[in-house]
Length: 125
Image (cartoon, rainbow, N blue to C red):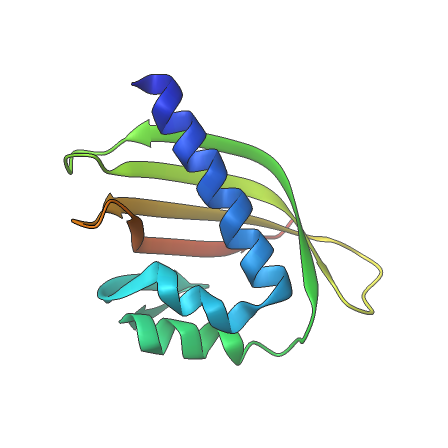
């Protein structure tokens, strides 16, 4: 079970950041109307609003470099908590930005997963 949680979490992280870095508008498919994103202290509810927020970020291109991925089962049956830390390289910027992100993944009846909760913070200092 633990190995499966780890492999699902890692596969999700690879998929999520690949989409974010190459086709941000397609992230919409990972969220549902009940999904919640906390982005630098701002709360956004619903897949459409979350996708709009991510698409409208003030940069066109970026690249994520993942440092750590920690996965745990959540109290929701089949749910997984995924905590990610790493660096973010914006196009044209010299320095990386450190970030942390927490995903709460929930299984769907179709056998997929969706992001129920997403918390993102840049790490300063």
